[in-house]
Image (cartoon, rainbow, N blue to C red; front, top):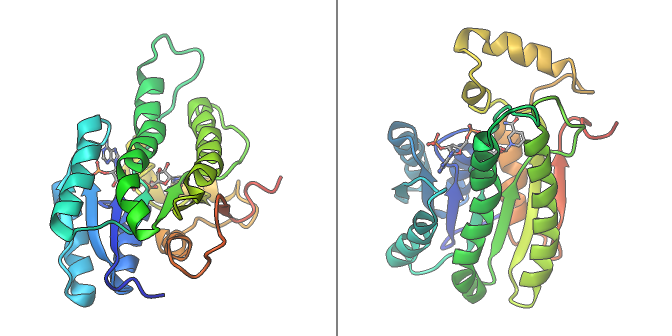
Length: 252
Ligand SMILES: NC(=O)c1ccc[n+]([C@@H]2O[C@H](COP(=O)([O-])OP(=O)(O)OC[C@H]3O[C@@H](n4cnc5c(N)ncnc54)[C@H](OP(=O)(O)O)[C@@H]3O)[C@@H](O)[C@H]2O)c1
């Protein structure tokens, strides 16, 4: 795989799967626009990307749930690098909520980030991806059974699957490919954001791993390899696909 001369936007690049994807893309020669909110972590990822081939990424510290910030990512990327070849939609979070909650706050937050942002980022990037016959990869959860507290998260997964398939068809005539990579439980900061304290992290992952058929927690580097393959020119007929990588978690 060779991404030399290709410009890739990676959302969620300050952590977890997005960070691993950014680092791998940089090793394959890509020039990167990295998006996140945590400055220290984003700059650290950028430093590691720059170390791979000496190409300095553009770092954009922006909250993507604000529409104009998605436009800003595209604008700044094109101003700086003149084109966009790849969009990796990886920013996301999990939160616990249920029908028994009395407000829509968490539901709305989940929709705003996990569903609305990939749609908006795609919309904003299309004029540039058309010119390069580019590629989009959406990262969202594997289709496992709905765990208690994760109903909106599961609804969003289903919506993103439809988005990936129908979006791919809509983009086909422009030569833009859209696919999805759908990980099972992966070792990232997702659990910290669910308020699991650092000292309980290993224990929590141990417990979760017992619920996965192959009893493993996935490392972000493995998911990143799949994302980079999907984004590359290696599979020109990979269009509208969901690449599930979950230790058979969705096989029940
Ligand atoms: N880890 C898993 O087990 C798993 C399983 C299935 C699917 N996924 C999906 O994989 C994707 C990546 O998650 P991850 O596991 O790598 O989680 P992570 O380590 O928590 O990373 C989440 C990323 O999203 C960014 N982000 C969050 N809110 C944002 C906002 N408002 N604006 C801009 N960026 C924002 C974070 O940036 P800052 O921290 O800088 O704000 C961070 O870079 C998510 O869509 C997640 O749903 C993860």
